[in-house]
Amino acid sequence: MTFSYNQLFTFTEAVFRSIGCPEDDATLATETLLSADLRGIDSHGVARLVGYVRLWEAGRINPTPRVGVTYETPSTAVVDGDGGLGLVVGPKAMRVAIEKARQVGTGWVSVKNSNHFGIAGYHAMLALAHDMIGVAMTNASPLVAPTHSLDRLLGTNPIAVAVPAGEQPDFVADLATTTAANGKLEIAQRKQLPVPEGWVQNADGSASTDANAVKNGGALLPLGGATGSHKGYALGAVVDIFSAVLSGANYGPWVPPFVAFLQPPTDPVGQGLGHFFGAMRVDAFRPADEFKAHMDNWITTFRNAHAIEGRKVLIPGDPEREMAAVRLLDGIPLLDAVIKDLEGVGQKFGVKL
Image 1 (cartoon, one colour):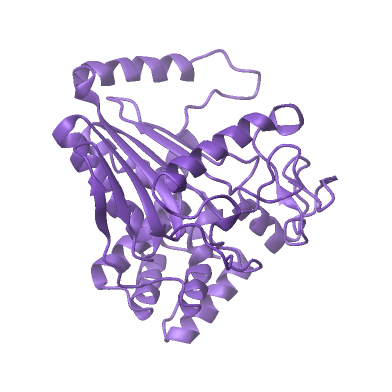
Image 2: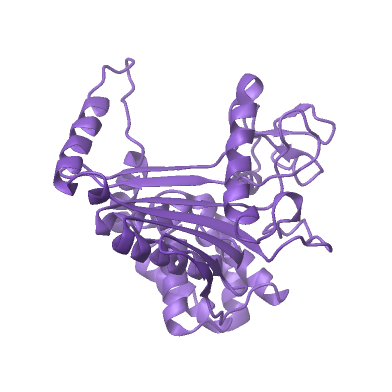
């Protein structure tokens, strides 16, 4: 079934208010969450709403956090999310980075005591309206085995970078440091389909195409496949260090999980989950108009590259931008399993989907 963006927005906002979020935070959380559905990243959108409610019911989300800076210099800060929704903590922390960049050219913010923040791209893109380059990353549920390991020590740990352009659409790279995000497994589970080889391994380290392999003790695999996973492992490690070791959040296997089949560690080494944000004012490097004109040239050059027959060369952000335009007009399709979950949440709070 297909639902309009406004229909899902009204429903989701009402659910966030029902768990105690102030009106402004409920609106912000909804906008952050649904940005994933609009951009075609269904694994991180409204399908995750039931997960946030589950964490709130378990006392792991503070619906009324006092998000604030605990340490800062002119260009850096540590933000304490006070156990709030990452969907709220993330944008507020990114605004701190943007304000510091406005004042001194760049701003860098590491966050502790937060929760899952949706898609990284949403937060990075907040910088674009200010003629800034935005960077966002976060650590996540420990479901990923480092290269040659059986132990799950890292999350999917995404990285997003958003770069403003002039006449061309902005450049937006948003990627997990694993071959696939866990949300892609969840979609395959709902559809009862296998996953491509290289996404997961079994508990004994053998290759698997079972979408439930991670639930059964296996692990997600780092980006890079059989011969290059050390590169994805290294990138995921960088995200973990920037997001958590730097801020005082939990890192590695101590990250509090979003998934229902794992329980939080009983011996945390930090506070909550961690994020890292950056904002760089373009005119701290060269005039913004000059930079954006050259970004247009860069984008046009790559997009017009000679393509393999039947294919086209894409710029990071193209598929998501095109999908958003379609879904704003035609609506957002939801799987039956997701609709059932949402209807269950709605019944719990007296909110109609």
